[in-house]
Image (cartoon, rainbow, N blue to C red):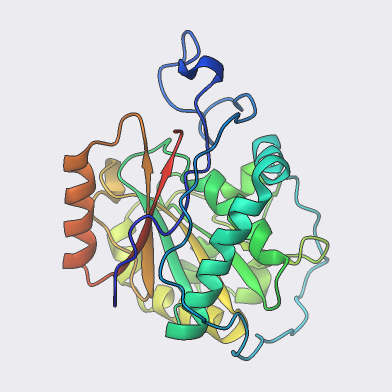
Amino acid sequence: MKEVDEALARAYARAPGGASRPGHAGPPGPHRPVPPAPTSPAVHELADRGNRSESGIEIGGTAPLSHPATELLWPPVVLRLEQDWGDRFDRMASGLVADRDAHNLRTILFTSCHRAEGRTTLVLTLARALARRPGRTVVVDADLTGPMLARLLGLRPDVGLDDIVEEGRSLDDALIEAPDDHLTVLPIRCPIGRPRDFLASPGWTCTLARLRRRFDLILLDGGPLFTGLSAAVLHRSVDAAVLVTHHGFTGERAIARAREVLEAGGVPLLGMAETFV
């Protein structure tokens, strides 16, 4: 598959004046306090899309879930990004829909070299753009050692992805439907102690297969490639990956190494998203 570098956009900006905030040692994001609203984002257009249709695949199943619908409490930074730069995320969504329709790329892993590179914030904002389009989108917390989606969205799940894979619980028990947002979320309740075994298990493969039967796009908010227990542990059964990098501290060597890890794991790199520029 042809690699599309810079297929997703630079979604964030430096603080006013281009300088970092005093006393702020790293980038803002889901693992840090909410930053000021971005001021001047620079966005690359999606490349080489041609005349691909944004329709043409069968809409996923609409079987009712076994628990009541839920209202998601969106992080303020996500709402502000959508308000100020929603058209940019709409173009990103168009690119993913085009790749889905043209190449059947439906299960997309979002990963990064390190933590705090803006990966989860980007995934959530992009999911809201996809939710305005036909079809069903599910956001899966696949950051096995540092799950954040449930806490960020104000959820207190009784059953999560970890219970499905490790204990054989029903997928319907864990999926959280938010009809007002036209989205579904699959959270993790607890960090995974042995991520390599988790991803190699039949439960993981079967869960993704079930998700593919029910949803048109599956966004996996995966963990970083080179941090802690999740180092170089690749998610199986994905169609492609997007590498999220931080403009300020993700160096070229780390990016090159990440490319090598993805290639060695047989995961095509769909594109790169550079944040905090």
